[in-house]
Length: 328
Image (tube, rainbow, N blue to C red; front, side):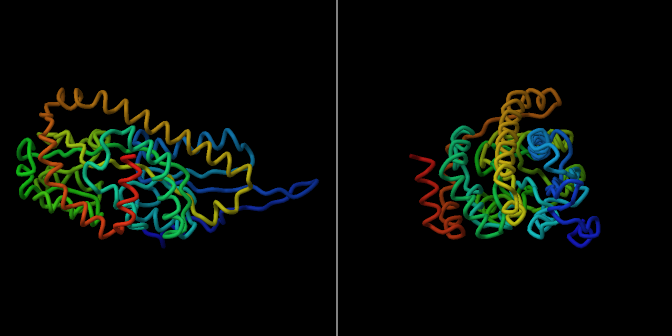
């Protein structure tokens, strides 16, 4: 669903002002939207945010919740949040379409552990990205949740070294730097809507794909894939974003409630990520998928040229700042 169709759904403004006997009151009405269904990390983040904000703000807010792609996919929702037709949206890899600085997350092996990534996003790196997204896209970052480390699945062979990626048709998000990274490693990256990937894998139009393990389970890719390789090549956060104008219109009290709800939502996705990582390898193996850990040193060495290409996109100064934050 595109922006035009979404606009037809509602002519409501973000802030509704009414009156009651005895005086005027203001109620903030927010539309929350996500392309995924219940159980997916992005859905968990938005649903937790909704529940926490409703509990804290009570009658001060009226929340509409749209999931399962009912208002469109992530690209459509990014259009809507910028147009203030949706006020709060969780965004994954496609956020690079709004702010190229987020291409930093396409740098392979940028983080050694999830905790390292979490600490950076909760600190100085998160502050840099929040400032950048507000300047570039007019969006306020409420919190950074977690999709987690991404792995590679395919139907051709186990992947042990970068040479095993040669000519594999792998679905990737549309991020130019993600595509560039896999091209550099020898694969044939193929951007495709996530909802179309299962059929493409089953029919052989794709050899494989790369995603966090939770996404492989949610979209049942393990049913049509023979191999999963635990490359953990990039870490993908969830950026819970709010339209900047809608955020600025909130009272100080409501901004505090929004911040606390977003923080709780981020924690929920990180706990979910840890739980899924702990159980999914065994789940996939029981389903008949061969799971392996590759020679990560060979992948790290092959990925070094990619950093220069990503630095050309985000600027060398930004790249240097990020590396300094992570390694300090």
